[in-house]
Image 1: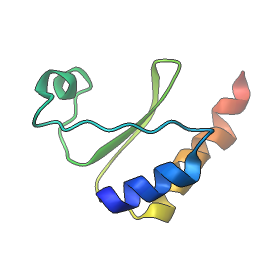
Image 2 (image 1 turned 120 degrees about the horizontal axis):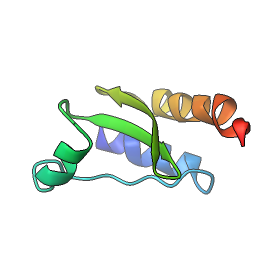
Image 3 (image 1 turned 120 degrees about the vertical axis):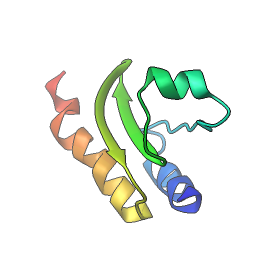
Amino acid sequence: MAPAYHKAAKMLEPEVRAGKINSDEERSLAARFEIVSIPTLIIFREGRELGRKPGIMETHEIVRWVRSFADSNYKSD
């Protein structure tokens, strides 16, 4: 899924900042966020988890999923 993720991250910049971790190398971080399935996408705003999506997704699915939060949750400021 890495190529799809990288393409989606580029498409979503600058409104969304994307990051990723290697849960095998960062086990304590994976435990902190209760990641049990790989890959797992988590969207945060101001440190608060807004959504979580486990499993492989294509670029357009990632972009659509992230933008769904912009349409619904981000306008509640």
